Image 1 (cartoon, helix red, strand yellow):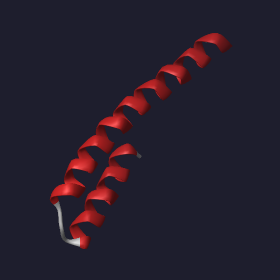
Image 2 (cartoon, helix red, strand yellow):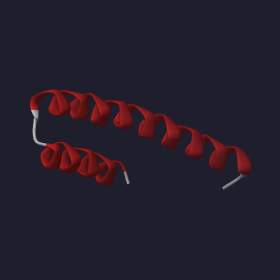
Image 3 (spheres, one colour):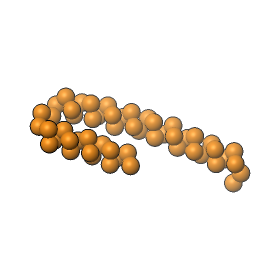
Image 4 (cartoon, one colour):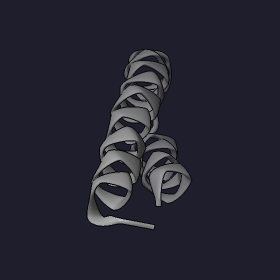
Length: 53
């Protein structure tokens, strides 16, 4: 594996992370509008961070 293949792999990994992060953020935004309890809103945020980890 040469350097350019490694750079390309890292680049595609970042692209996929960005669209997945955008999808999770969209779902979280909808949930934060629906949920009223601070505890449930906190849980939704924590779960969204865990999904992206």
